[in-house]
Image (cartoon, rainbow, N blue to C red; front, side):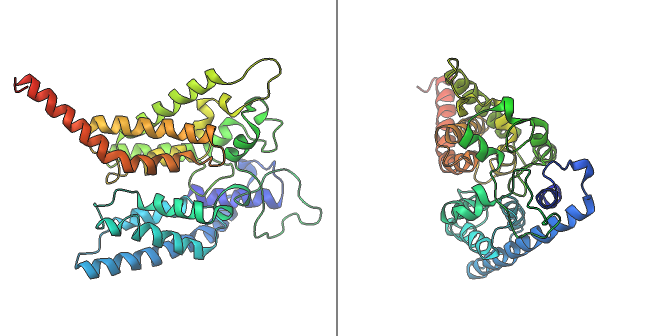
Amino acid sequence: LFGMWNVGFQHERATTDWALSPADANHLQCLLYGAFKFIPIYAVTIIVGGTLEAIFSLIRKHEINEGFLVTSLLFPLTLPPDIPLWQVALGIAFGVVVGKEIFGGTGMNILNPALTARIFLYFAYAPDISGDKVWVSGSAVAAGTEGAWIDGATGATPLGYFALNGADTAGMAEASTLNIGWMDAFMGWIPGSIGETSTAACLIGAAILIFSKVGSWRVMLSCLVGMVSLTLLFNVLAPAGDGAAPHYLALGPEWHFVIGSFAFGSIFMATDPVSAAQTNTGRWIYGFMIGALTVLVRVLNPAYPAGIMLAIIFMNVFAPLIDHYVMKANIRRREVRLGLQ
């Protein structure tokens, strides 16, 4: 719901005034416009992905599992609102077939299907899913076009801005072309994919997942610890003095927490009970590495600023190996305690 509202809010800003505040927005109009963008994406995901799930279930003579309903809601939230619907169909087909069904279906996949679908689109159709074609930035609106209906506009997301311009956090709130502050990013009325912008909304989701015992709080917390640890290390290594230009290394953990998909990924994607580590110790290692790798990819390879996505998929592959060595270590400790070694 917040994602739909923000799509409409960003559209209203783009067609009127970039300085428009959330309090002054037409909330019903924002929500309706966002629904106009989101619902077709969601419908295509359900139709294409659901059909493929049904086909594989019939072939294998399994009952159709409701697990796809989770994938079908998470995947659209990772997308920009102006993505072509044929790409949505292609992405979810890849995610269901390659990310899930070839491993044996529900409960057998080693990769998160929604994230697999998103990564496929990220590399196959990069101009349409990331970077300059996602949203709009800047305050200039062409004369005579105020309030006009537009199909799309260009501009960098906050994550893309930092990747290109460095960590000019002092000027971020006032002088930058994005004209946003930390609280704007935390609340979510900023450019970004549909579901990723609001860290506040993601934290509400985290509370629900933890309370319902669906998502692991160990994974969420260790992702945060890993992100903060490596960010502080990079802060120490950042160039300083002698008029050195601001550098991405100097970006603080508070900004890494609220820009990009860090909150969304660490709460809703990394905690996937099938593709995440299964042991408690393994979850700490798994989550810590996701947080650290996210910052590593963002800072040292700004060509791929969406580091959390790549970090989660990478650690999905290593999760079984982590669990294997955690269990071996537990067995060894028991054998020593019982005098068997």
